Length: 141
Image 1 (spheres, helix red, strand yellow):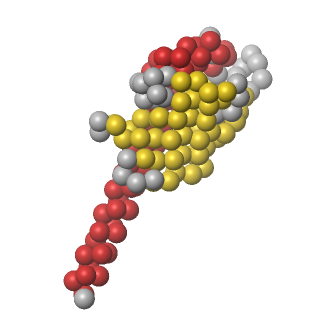
Image 2 (tube, rainbow, N blue to C red):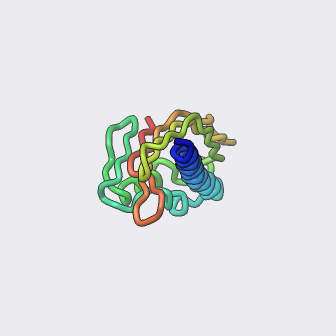
Protein backbone atom coordinates (compact mmCIF):
# COMPACT_ATOMS: atom_id res chain seq x y z
CA UNK A 1 0.00 0.00 0.00
CA UNK A 2 2.85 2.37 0.84
CA UNK A 3 4.42 1.75 -2.58
CA UNK A 4 1.12 2.67 -4.22
CA UNK A 5 1.03 6.06 -2.42
CA UNK A 6 4.66 6.73 -3.28
CA UNK A 7 4.01 6.00 -6.96
CA UNK A 8 0.83 8.12 -6.90
CA UNK A 9 2.72 11.02 -5.29
CA UNK A 10 5.58 10.82 -7.80
CA UNK A 11 3.09 10.60 -10.68
CA UNK A 12 1.29 13.70 -9.37
CA UNK A 13 4.56 15.61 -9.11
CA UNK A 14 5.48 14.55 -12.66
CA UNK A 15 2.11 15.63 -14.05
CA UNK A 16 2.16 18.97 -12.21
CA UNK A 17 5.79 19.58 -13.17
CA UNK A 18 5.04 18.66 -16.76
CA UNK A 19 2.10 21.05 -16.87
CA UNK A 20 4.23 23.78 -15.32
CA UNK A 21 6.95 23.43 -17.97
CA UNK A 22 4.31 23.50 -20.70
CA UNK A 23 2.84 26.65 -19.17
CA UNK A 24 6.29 28.26 -19.03
CA UNK A 25 6.85 27.37 -22.69
CA UNK A 26 3.58 29.06 -23.67
CA UNK A 27 4.35 32.14 -21.57
CA UNK A 28 7.74 32.43 -23.30
CA UNK A 29 6.00 32.37 -26.69
CA UNK A 30 3.66 35.15 -25.54
CA UNK A 31 6.66 37.14 -24.32
CA UNK A 32 8.38 36.67 -27.67
CA UNK A 33 5.21 37.77 -29.44
CA UNK A 34 5.00 40.99 -27.42
CA UNK A 35 8.71 41.66 -28.07
CA UNK A 36 8.18 41.17 -31.80
CA UNK A 37 5.15 43.45 -31.74
CA UNK A 38 7.04 46.13 -29.86
CA UNK A 39 9.75 46.04 -32.56
CA UNK A 40 7.06 46.58 -35.21
CA UNK A 41 7.45 43.05 -36.61
CA UNK A 42 4.00 41.54 -37.19
CA UNK A 43 5.48 38.64 -39.19
CA UNK A 44 7.54 37.67 -36.14
CA UNK A 45 4.50 38.15 -33.87
CA UNK A 46 2.57 35.63 -35.98
CA UNK A 47 5.09 32.86 -35.29
CA UNK A 48 3.02 31.91 -32.23
CA UNK A 49 0.00 31.09 -34.40
CA UNK A 50 -0.72 27.80 -36.16
CA UNK A 51 0.27 28.21 -39.80
CA UNK A 52 -2.84 26.55 -41.13
CA UNK A 53 -6.02 27.40 -43.00
CA UNK A 54 -7.79 25.99 -39.93
CA UNK A 55 -6.55 28.71 -37.56
CA UNK A 56 -9.54 30.59 -36.11
CA UNK A 57 -9.45 34.24 -35.06
CA UNK A 58 -12.66 35.56 -33.53
CA UNK A 59 -12.83 39.34 -33.32
CA UNK A 60 -15.44 42.04 -33.07
CA UNK A 61 -16.25 41.68 -36.79
CA UNK A 62 -16.70 37.91 -36.72
CA UNK A 63 -14.49 34.94 -37.42
CA UNK A 64 -11.43 34.81 -39.64
CA UNK A 65 -10.09 31.49 -40.87
CA UNK A 66 -6.47 30.87 -41.73
CA UNK A 67 -3.02 32.08 -40.80
CA UNK A 68 -2.52 34.12 -43.98
CA UNK A 69 -5.80 35.99 -43.61
CA UNK A 70 -5.10 36.66 -39.94
CA UNK A 71 -1.70 38.11 -40.89
CA UNK A 72 -3.30 40.31 -43.58
CA UNK A 73 -5.89 41.55 -41.09
CA UNK A 74 -3.23 42.45 -38.51
CA UNK A 75 -1.24 44.36 -41.13
CA UNK A 76 -4.35 46.18 -42.33
CA UNK A 77 -5.48 47.13 -38.82
CA UNK A 78 -1.95 48.06 -37.65
CA UNK A 79 -0.24 49.56 -40.72
CA UNK A 80 2.55 51.42 -38.88
CA UNK A 81 4.46 51.68 -35.59
CA UNK A 82 2.28 54.52 -34.31
CA UNK A 83 -0.85 52.37 -34.66
CA UNK A 84 0.88 49.32 -33.19
CA UNK A 85 2.17 51.14 -30.12
CA UNK A 86 3.75 49.12 -27.32
CA UNK A 87 2.01 45.87 -26.40
CA UNK A 88 1.73 44.50 -22.89
CA UNK A 89 0.06 41.21 -21.97
CA UNK A 90 -1.35 40.53 -18.52
CA UNK A 91 -2.03 36.81 -18.21
CA UNK A 92 -5.01 36.15 -15.93
CA UNK A 93 -5.36 32.39 -16.21
CA UNK A 94 -3.68 29.37 -17.76
CA UNK A 95 -5.28 25.96 -17.71
CA UNK A 96 -4.00 22.66 -19.02
CA UNK A 97 -6.68 20.78 -20.94
CA UNK A 98 -4.63 17.62 -21.24
CA UNK A 99 -1.24 16.84 -22.71
CA UNK A 100 -1.82 18.67 -25.98
CA UNK A 101 -4.08 21.63 -25.15
CA UNK A 102 -3.89 24.77 -23.01
CA UNK A 103 -6.40 27.55 -22.46
CA UNK A 104 -5.10 31.05 -21.70
CA UNK A 105 -7.09 34.13 -20.65
CA UNK A 106 -5.51 37.55 -20.50
CA UNK A 107 -5.65 41.25 -21.08
CA UNK A 108 -3.76 43.20 -23.72
CA UNK A 109 -2.89 46.87 -23.68
CA UNK A 110 -1.40 49.06 -26.41
CA UNK A 111 0.30 52.24 -25.24
CA UNK A 112 0.40 54.71 -28.13
CA UNK A 113 1.92 58.17 -28.32
CA UNK A 114 -0.02 59.78 -31.16
CA UNK A 115 -3.43 58.23 -30.63
CA UNK A 116 -5.61 56.81 -27.90
CA UNK A 117 -4.40 53.70 -26.13
CA UNK A 118 -6.28 50.47 -26.83
CA UNK A 119 -6.97 47.49 -24.62
CA UNK A 120 -9.10 44.42 -24.28
CA UNK A 121 -9.28 40.82 -23.19
CA UNK A 122 -8.42 37.65 -25.06
CA UNK A 123 -8.77 33.90 -24.85
CA UNK A 124 -6.34 31.59 -26.60
CA UNK A 125 -6.65 27.90 -27.28
CA UNK A 126 -3.20 26.34 -27.68
CA UNK A 127 -2.32 22.97 -29.13
CA UNK A 128 0.97 21.11 -29.23
CA UNK A 129 1.53 20.18 -32.87
CA UNK A 130 4.72 18.44 -34.00
CA UNK A 131 6.31 19.22 -30.64
CA UNK A 132 5.53 22.96 -30.77
CA UNK A 133 2.88 24.96 -28.93
CA UNK A 134 0.77 27.09 -31.28
CA UNK A 135 -2.38 29.14 -30.98
CA UNK A 136 -5.17 27.35 -32.87
CA UNK A 137 -7.98 29.71 -31.83
CA UNK A 138 -7.81 33.35 -30.69
CA UNK A 139 -10.83 35.24 -29.40
CA UNK A 140 -9.94 38.91 -29.11
CA UNK A 141 -13.11 41.02 -29.44
